[in-house]
Length: 275
Image (cartoon, rainbow, N blue to C red; front, side, top):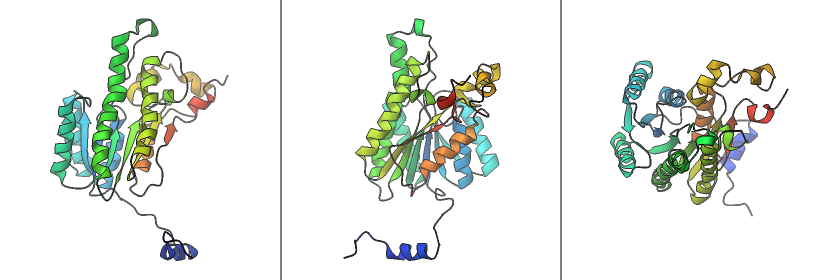
């Protein structure tokens, strides 16, 4: 007896070595990129705009930078993006995201959450307020937005995808990163819990390493991380395009992956102790 889940038509195509690799599958669909105007976000926004996605892009406070990105996307890709300001942990901000999605009138297919804070506080100065601020920015806000918009996609026949931005420090132990890495590690774990929670929404995380944009850019520019290349641990530092491609992989509408994390660090977290 043949299983009711067996796809004979597709199997016959495989026998003929005919495979289905659709392109621009996010064109005309809505994707939210929270924190998309910061260091790593614009590359992902650009990649999705090039594909023809309808974009809702969030930022915390720097409206001037957000408007610069908005103008660049319109000039480079002839795409308009809707900007949503505010702290993710605030109810008003989540409502503004929902209103922007409604305005576009196209199915919500994906949510990327870049929002966070580098939480640069030395171990000696670490206190309750610093820990709570980092937890709010790097865990509480992203999880609450994911829950809100994940429920929207779960109710949709098409489902959808959520991608969290973690860090290599969330999976490997680095010194002096307690107040940043621990909330990010919790966020990566939350991705696995949410992936189990929903049936039609895939939830994954991307964990960048030392990249030429975002919180690591100044350290790369100063030469602080040169030893990692000199020792052969990595061949180069990361680019925001590396992160964007990983995010886009998880956003693919027919993706068969959930509850996973991709570390985009060139092997740094594995080989950083060389030499």
